[in-house]
Image (cartoon, rainbow, N blue to C red; front, side, top):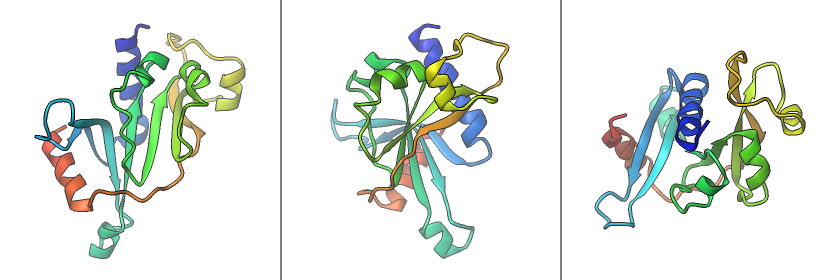
Length: 165
């Protein structure tokens, strides 16, 4: 798979396995109008309310997901916007092996993994991502540690609505 196909595969897997039926938006622009090169874009933002009450919504958390198809993509300077309450990189096990020492402490990593295998097993003996006989899912290779976000809930919800996706 080339870089574009891998990104599409990982994005579709994230939507199908983690986001479908939840509150999320894709390709969310932060700081729109800040000037060329100053705008930030997040691949996916998910909002998880504690419950449906007013206070439950106010206590909700934002999870940011950045999809990275390879090491070059991770280091490209585009889209490492970890401004959520929790933040994840979504990638392949091969890319995870290459970037694991570069991922900030607070950021977690989801890896594409066959349903019947654990990330540790995939780390030792990876299944080719082109294998269409496998039921793929995303599993946590590295847990995200919560952090204090700097943007308000209403601001992030507005950005999600504005993305329209």
